[in-house]
Image (cartoon, rainbow, N blue to C red):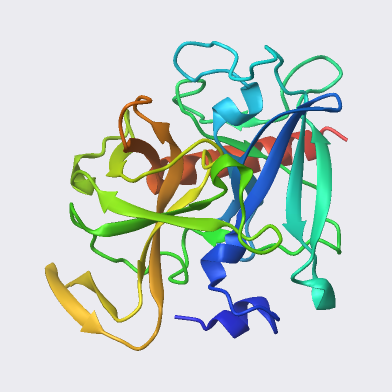
Length: 278
C-alpha cells in the first residue's frame, strides 16, 4: 500500500488521506443557494478517466423517490459549486469551481447509471481539469483505496462528508462513524444498495463510505479469511452514501462500489463520444 506522502506530496495539515477526498458542494438556482452536499472524485486507475460523483437528488433538487422539491423555496438547481483543493504549494486552500448543470438545449450535464438510469441515486460529472485543481480520487482498481478488506455486519464504517454544511478546518469534512447493518454478499446487480446504521444528517448525501482500520484487517487469501496486523492505516472504499431510509431512522442507504464502476465507465464513454464530435 502506498503512503500518504507518495500519493499527495507534502501536505501541510496532519489529516488522513480520505479527509482530502471528500469535497464540499453547493447547489444553486442562478445565485440563490438551495442546498449543500458532498461529492468525491472517482477513477479506475491513475491513468484512466476521472469524474466527480455525487447523489442524483443533489443535482436534481428533488426527492429521489417522490420527486418533490427538496428546497423550501421550491427551486431546483441549475448550477453547482465544487470546493476543490488547490494544487502545488497552495494545498490546504480551496478553489471554488462553478459549473452549469444543464446545456443550452436543457439536457443535463450529469451522467446516470447506464442500466438503472434515474432509479440510481448516483451521477457523474465530467470535468475539464485546470492545473490549479488537485485531483485526489478514490481508485477503484488500486489497492490504495480497495485493499480487499472483509467487512461483516456490526463492524464500523465511516461516512465522510458535511452534515448541515459543517466542516472541521476550512472545507475538510466530518467523519460520522456507524456500523454495517447487513451482509455485503446480499447486494445484487439490480439493487446495488446496502444499509448502514449511522447518525447521518442532511448535507452528507454523496459522501464516500469507507471501512477505516488503524491496526489491521481481515482479507481473503487462498479462499480463506485471514487476519493481518499492521502499523499502517488502511481503508476499504465501499460506496456513496445516499440518505436515511426515513426521517425517524438512523438506517441509511449506500450505493455499493460495484455500481460506481459501471457509472465511471459510462462517464468515460460519454466523455469520449462528445470529444470525438468536435
